Length: 142
Ligand SMILES: [Fe+2]
Image 1 (cartoon, rainbow, N blue to C red):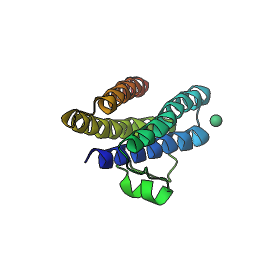
Image 2 (tube, rainbow, N blue to C red):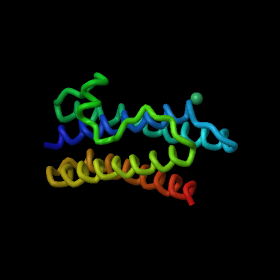
Image 3 (tube, rainbow, N blue to C red):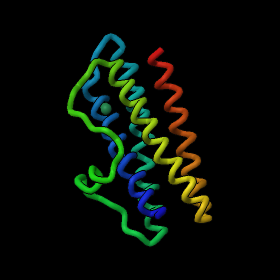
């Protein structure tokens, strides 16, 4: 069901946002300012998408999830309390960005199938945004 997939998408975006913000706070190293700012741009974009995804769920007349425990049970994004070195943080965000992309693509296919073109259009934009994030994250790791 499309609404269920959107709930997973909302949870993924929220947990990915939080992970990037967590790393923004705790990253260390000689390139701290660049990493700190890069992560801020990332988490701000992803956080902004959470509200839009939740409102799409409401357009389907389904209630959007809104507790940490519920979002945690829905998400595919891997959480960790460990604070690794900067490069490991970037690689971790890159891997989870790929998880986010898989979730978005699955939702896109379902939306197209159900002729929910407003929703597929939004998901397409998010796929593009996360592909751009992926390019930047990959470039840092090279
Ligand atoms: Fe900050």
